[in-house]
Length: 124
Image 1 (tube, one colour):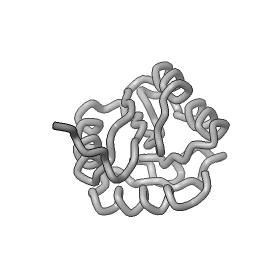
Image 2 (image 1 turned 90 degrees about the horizontal axis):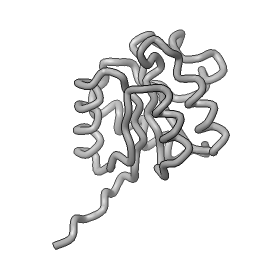
Image 3 (image 1 turned 30 degrees about the horizontal axis):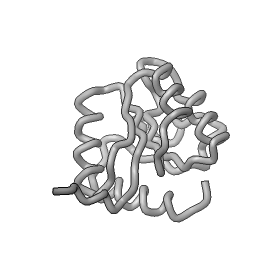
Image 4 (image 1 turned 45 degrees about the horizontal axis):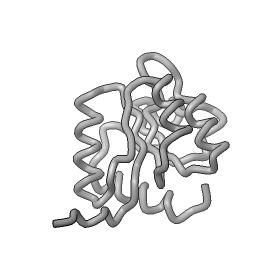
């Protein structure tokens, strides 16, 4: 018996709060996405961002007190679409990336779906 492949694509998730990360993984799976990789550490995120194949990334803006900019820079260089998740509003998003889509934490599954769909439809 084979498992059907997800309809939404694959996601790279960076979130330092384990409970929030598990909740987002559950939401993604419910929406038909698979999680290609997940982490709560900047250094591991940099390694995964370079080595993992995925369709879109969700990046927590502040990971253990460190700004996510180096990971965003790497994803931008790889021409990979990504969205931010932040509890700080748009002012919390790194200045160079304020034109990128952002989810305000806490967010609902409907908001996540809308932003993922919209981001995947536009060029990275």
